[in-house]
Image (tube, rainbow, N blue to C red; front, top):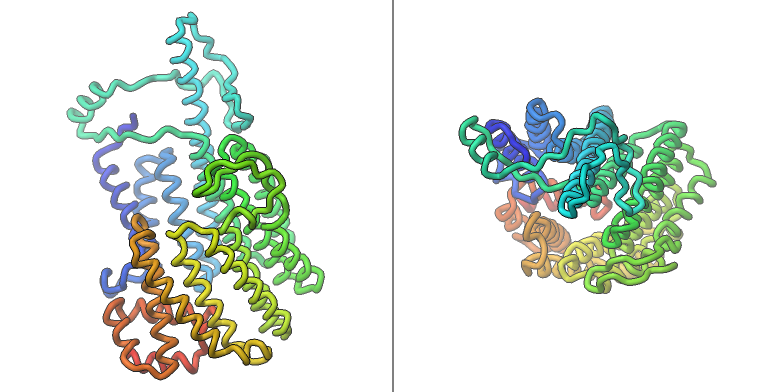
Length: 468
């Protein structure tokens, strides 16, 4: 049992709520007019930092703080690279400290369990210098030594009384498990993936690559040996990191070889036979996945590979002036999304449909490829169909029950649908979505669509005029 001061118990809950609100697709009218998405993240960061001054060794607070910093880094990337770099580096340091504490907690739990097991079996005195091995093949980096605190099991009744007399709250904290360790390790890899996009030096990129390779090969894979339900997630994190490294390496070096390496990474990272042994697939349970390709058993791998193909297509079409080659990758991305829709649980159909609608709009705006010009109107109609599917699936109540993801998809799909129909000459749709979601939410989605190539700036101005 973990005893937390009453004032920090309130502070932790407030900090968590502040961050949770930043992750929900709430209309801007929900917040004060002076509030922005970044200012809300900054407030959540400050609140978590204040909680850490009272409990600097709390793994729970450290993990949440790392998540806030990671979100801040992503938010800063296109606004202030120096702030993004600082936030990403601080997030990594926070997750590293969190993981170190969690390892100590995990090892202590193993010691306690062994103590209680021996006591239950009446095996006599306990040798507290015993070596701890959980028998599952994971080497925990924390060194067990003479200073290890003696195992203590809290008495719930006495804890409750103590809390009443001292003005403290007794908070039940979930035990640290191998899944807890894996959560933190994967969170580190995600932040590293964000961090490397800020690099302009190949030497630093190589150092980061080696750091993540060691974390993944020596730590994550060992934990996954006994967690088949987490293997796909772990492989995906590594595959996305590998592709991101290849992309950044090309953007730094700008050589033909580095572009070819990027292409190869996108094609092979999700398709080589990475998985060996039992693996858990949603709806199918645990299966033997010897020599199966990741894209054959994971709809998320299909979605992630489609994202990689779109990045390649954008570079080929607009940077290297090779639109025909770019069109091929756009088509491969569309095929992956179609396959993902067939493989994914129903709760994920909405987000896949939204991605497919976005992709078809991008394809419809290519002017220098015969297939794109010929099928322009069909692609625009298909985009509207996919946005309709996204709205319908998102409104079904099957997704977003806990994190608001479904509502976010519905809002984005409705706004994009209104933009396309307004471009087609329909009236009154933009005013309707502004009334429903607020003008700032509409502008944010339109700006995102502009950045993604869904529409051009000139056309967007006329659409904005319709929203007034």
